[in-house]
Image (cartoon, rainbow, N blue to C red; front, side, top):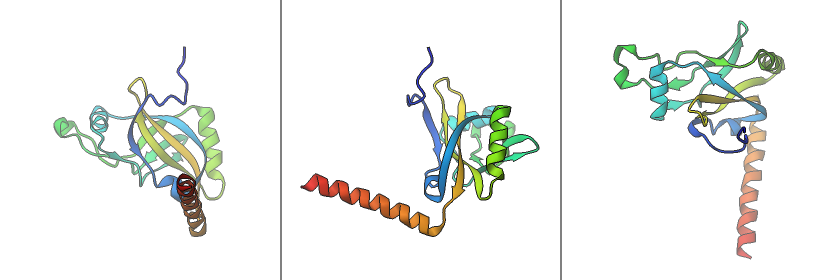
Length: 157
């Protein structure tokens, strides 16, 4: 029997918390990622950052660009490049959907979360996003502050 998707039975490696502030996330998709052994070992120690990275469709393939996975010291000469382009695994149908989505003006693919799933496989959650303007960011922050204020007032009285 398959597990429910909402079951948080995974370990988060890296999270792009800034993405939800800087972008309107229209939808998200789970993709696989091709890694070397030393990269997986480095991820198990939690040494990665996806905050400055993005995904791009190039020559019919999906790539993670500027994703940081620190070098694994015990790998020695068999280590990896820290900021190399990494191929993402997605079905052809989803790839064409992502290609069409990024073809629209202002749309981009932003990595939201990198995690180990329940089988121990590294997965990446990509968001199809549109950048926010400064006034949109201020409105989001004001709405969040009002929610906090409202909760505090309800708690007091």
